[in-house]
Amino acid sequence: MDRNGNIKGKFNIIDLLVIILLVVVVAGIAVRYGSSVTTAVKSDEEFEYVVKVESVRDFTISALEKMGKVTDKNSTLDLGEIVDVKVEPTEYQSTTADGRIIFAEQPERYTAYVTIHTRGKESDNSYITADSNELSVGRTTEIYSKYVHTTGMIMNVTKLSE
Figure 1 (cartoon, helix red, strand yellow):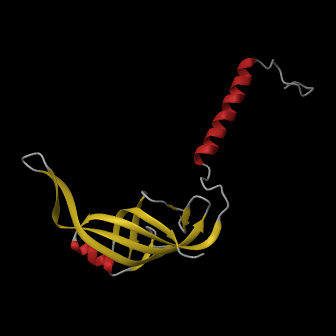
Figure 2 (tube, one colour; figure 1 turned 180 degrees about the vertical axis):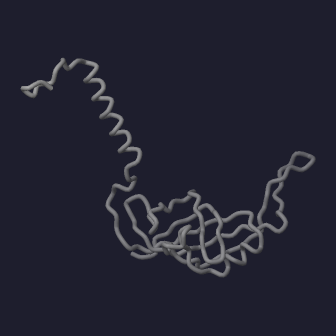
């Protein structure tokens, strides 16, 4: 700047392109990392979701059947309570010598359907738990409790309170 407060030099097309590029980059970062939940959020709703835990051994089933509270990884947030566990043998696909595909039971492996009740928030298109995770069908989630840590896929989400 000179004594009169004027900027020395001229403003040219390259300066304009740099400014436009910076604005686009900042806008892109804001869209990418901004909150995905922008619709109106209703608070304190009760949900039930079912998690399918596949191919686990009997001691994992025993731990799940003890029920109990579900927490986050550090056991600081209450994320609900296991209220039901349904167990069935794990099946796998096998091809026979003549080319047919059959389903056979995998020995000493089980599939558990774990029903969890939790409280959280509801938006127009999603359910959000206390740790800000979205509950949606097909999403992989982790189950942490006093007795077990395992991973499964959410199969169903139902709003309980009206």
